[in-house]
Amino acid sequence: MAEFFATGHVADLVLLVLVLEAALLVVWHRRTGRGLAPAAVLGLALPGVALVLALRAALVGAGWPWVAMALTGAFAAHLLDLWLRVRR
Image (cartoon, rainbow, N blue to C red; front, side, top):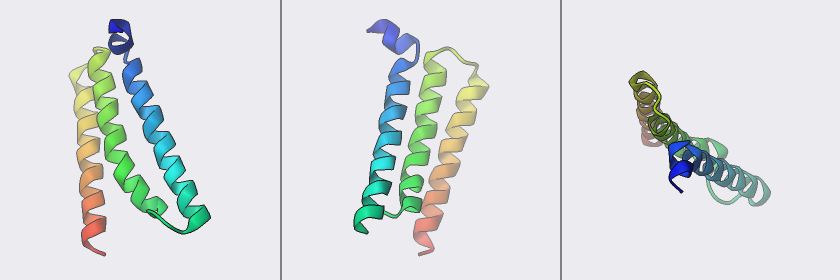
């Protein structure tokens, strides 16, 4: 189990789940017209993906700039999502 975390594979698994969840939400919306629009799904998923990339970078010992870049991307995606929600 320690190797699963040390190699960053735990983050890979979380990324896979995030992508599958987003894809299922988009497919469901397109088939039924219910649920979140694809743009809203992207707005929810993108910050999470960036946070998990930061986690992966930290777990595998990447340099701090990589972690900081992923965290900055998560923050920017979060702010964009908030801005899009508030202006509606």
